[in-house]
Every structure is written in structure tokens, then in C-alpha cells.
Length: 417
Image (cartoon, rainbow, N blue to C red; front, side, top):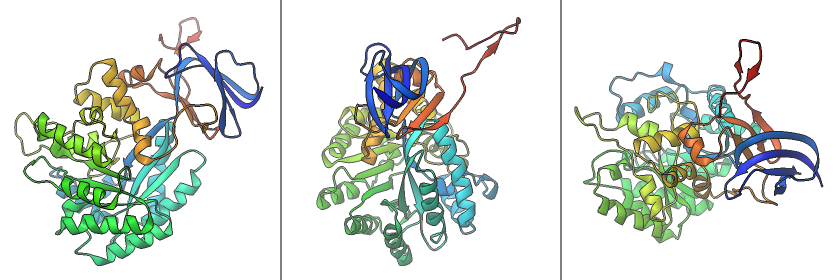
């Protein structure tokens, strides 16, 4: 057999022992032990773990890396929205492109092969951020698949121009539409109008929802009801939903069963949710993190994602989903191998289901491969294993050198496994 690229001695989920993987014309040509193959490029990974790459299900590339333009005094959601609204009025297309490029490149070398980014279109941002991210999507298409969600961060019903701009953004190439009912004076109308746009353009929907710790009220029912009424099951995602962290297990279970039945996916944003919530609790601050693993156990497509990088919503970040899944696992107090494997799934296969993209290492499938310096998915999360190399549709997209320790005699060796 001939191949473009042959990767030897990989460990892959569901396979006993190391295998080789051959790629030809952007597809996986063969997987098996000790393949007899003539390849243009060949590399031996010595038992490292391979998978199709991390999938970022919720990030804001347009608002990344603006800490120097914003004040963080209270560390609240309201402050973050206000400070970002003030800053984005000064965004230019080139500015957004430069900042988003920095984060997207970091995501690629962190092993991410697919991503969904929100992009705000409203009278303050105009269409400048969308134009920048449409350019970037084309420029990085060889290394990552980028979905763009035209997003109304600051309301809709009180600002009819935003609704017209969302419609124009979808016509211009945005992949889906999103809203934020808790910033709108009429949340129900906000949800309905976002669905109107989704149905008119035949696209998916992604809402920021229930982002506080007061379980006495919720907009979740509005989204679920519209999902069912429009027949949009499997095409709707909700992000944050931190109210769930303050509900009794029986109530969470009931909501989980309803989300699963309606086909509504959930995304948890650990870095942001932990940073912004619970600040009014002087002692024993709540974690403010929706129990995604419990909802996944009820059949909900549940994911973990980055949300923001270096801005008032999250003044941290490196676009590493392996690190983010580890943060979730630690805060959620996951311990067993099965629980840790579920956390890995939330930044991999489950996230791919939420984005409705092809995913998996299988003969004939897309040759999207990322190799981690770990024995398996569980070790990758427990040890925050660094990525070593990646391929997108059979083309090498990045490489990171393994560390070496130097001995007194001048010799060198990798760290002990």
C-alpha cells in the first residue's frame, strides 16, 4: 500500500495495543498494527495517544485579548458586558483579525481541529468583526474548521437594527445565529426572533442563557418550548446555565431529561463561570458550574469550552481545551476513570455532536489527527498532556517538540513516562 503519510505506534481509543495510521488524499486509508506501507512521510510516536482533535464549542474570538482596553473593578457579568460594549465601538477589522489570529493559532497548536466562535453584530461593532472572522476562517481553513455564530450580546427587541444586521450576517456567510435573552427587555420575544432568523436561513441556534445563581427564574423553558415548536431538536445549544449549580439534584435531573428529549445541547464555560459568579457570597462561594457530567448521563449532549480569553469576562486563557476539561474535572470533583473519560468526551466527540460535524478515526473518514503525549484519554486529562503534532485533512497543521532532559555527560533523554 502507498500513502501520503504514515503515523506509527499510536494508541487509539477502542484499539488494543499500538497501531499505525495511514493517510491518503485527506482521508484515513488504513488503521492497523505494523502496516506494510510505502509513505511519502513517516513518523513513529512510540505509543502516544491519537484522536481526531479537540472541538471548541463556544468561544468569542472577536472579544479576545482586550484586557488593556478595559477596567475590571467588580468582576461581575454586568461590568464585563458594559466594558466590552465600550471597547468594541473602537474595534477595526484589522484589530479584530490580529487578536483573533493570535487566539486561533494558539488553539491549533493546542490540538483543536474544529471551533465555533460567536461574533457580535450590532450598531456598536457594525459588521467589522464579522468581516475579520470571515477572512480568518478562509485563511486558516487548512488547519481548523471554524463555525461563526452571528450573535446579539446586548439585546435585540430594543434595537431593531441589530436584528437586521443578524439577518445580513447570515446572508454574508455566518453559519448560525445566537442570542442572549437575559440582556433583552423582552426575553421571550428575543428568543422567538432568534428562532425566526434560524428558520428563515435554515441554520442552528446557540444561546447564552441563565447566567447567574438565582434559580427562582429562568429563560430555559422559553428556549426548550421554541425548539419543540419549531422542530429544531438537535440544532440548539445553550451556554452557561449556571443556575443549575444552585438546584437540587432532583430538579437538575428533571431539566436534564427535558433537554435530552427536546434535543438541546449544553455548554459549560468553567473559566468564565467560576470567575464571574458567586462574588456576592463573602464565605463558601458556590462553584457556579452547571453539572455537565450529570446531564450527559441523562442523554444531554454536554460540552466544555473556553468562552473568553484575556478580556473582562475571563482575564486568563491559552485556548487549551485539554486544560479546560481538566479544570472542569477538578472543580466538579470527578475522580474515576469513567468520569475523566467523560470530561475528555466533552471537548471531543460530544462537542463535535453539538457542532454537527463529522468526527472519528475510521478508515475512509477525514484524516484529522492530533497526537497527545499520553497513553490514553484519561491520562491526557489527569496529566494535562501536551499535544505533539496534528494533521487536518491529511495535511500537517502543527508540531510541538517533546521536551528533553540533558545529562551531565552531555547526553539527552525525554522525561520518564
